Structures are given as structure tokens and as C-alpha cells.
Amino acid sequence: MEKSEIIKKMEESVSKVIAIDASEALVLIEKKIAINGRTKSFITYSNLVEGIEFSFENINNGQPFLINRNDWSGLNRAIIGTILAHVSIRSFQKHDFMASVLVVNSIDCSPSDQFFNWMKHIGLINDSQFEIYAFWADHVKRAFNYYKVHDTL
Image (cartoon, rainbow, N blue to C red; front, top):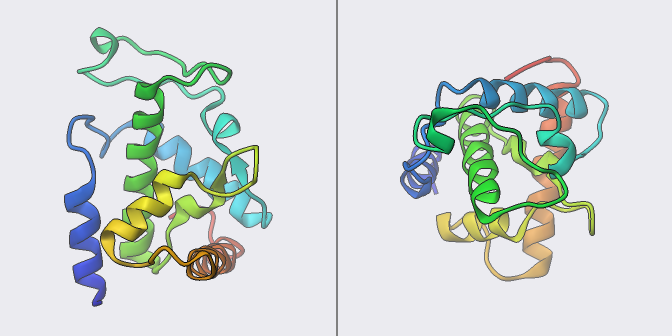
């Protein structure tokens, strides 16, 4: 599949309900991912959102809010998933890797099932565990190689 087709599928599949593109949270999350990538380490979802104030016109009456790291709601997961999708679209467009592969859950230290389901939906992987982990490892390697010489996307 051509890169332009992958990007088109990624963009079409991302929720438009939450206006993410210019959010300050997006920039801060990209920075946190870059810091971890530079040290060749992963960051958990909980550490990713720590200290970040989120503010969207259509959520919480437009008032800033923090995500409770110990009590993730469906809305919180949707917000982070949408932001990370935008991060991956941006990193893939510019540098051919999905930056959100460096964000993992604290239980098994891998990206969420939603991330892998998104990659399946786009057509980049299938249900093979080997293919899933090979894809993940490849993009982790690309991310680490990129961030060892760059501070941001």
C-alpha cells in the first residue's frame, strides 16, 4: 500500500468529534513521547497524561481539566486515542513511523488493543501475533532511530 493511501485511511478513520489538531495537549504529548524516544524508553498512558491540562470546546463546557490517571473513563480513553492517532499521522507523514508505538500500558508494556485494531483497520497488519509484534518492533526501531537525533517531530 502506498504511503499516501495509508495516510488517507488514517485520517479518514480518526474521530472528528474532538478538535485535536492545534491543541496544546497534542504538542505536550508529542514532547513527552520524544523525550522517551530519545532515551530509547517507553512511556505509559498514565505517565503520558500526568500534568497535562486538556481543554476542548465541546468537552467539560470548554473548561480545562486533568485526566484522573487512576480512573480512566471511556471519554478519557477516546481523548488520548484521538490525540495519539494525530501524533501517529503526523509522525508517519513526516518521518515514516507511528510515534504512538512508544506509548504503552503498564500491564504488558505494549500499545493498546485499540492501536493494533486501528492498524488492522487501515490494512497494515492482520491478526497474526507475529505480524503484530513485527510491525510494532519495526516502528519502535524507527522511532528510536529518529528521536536519537531529533528533539521533536
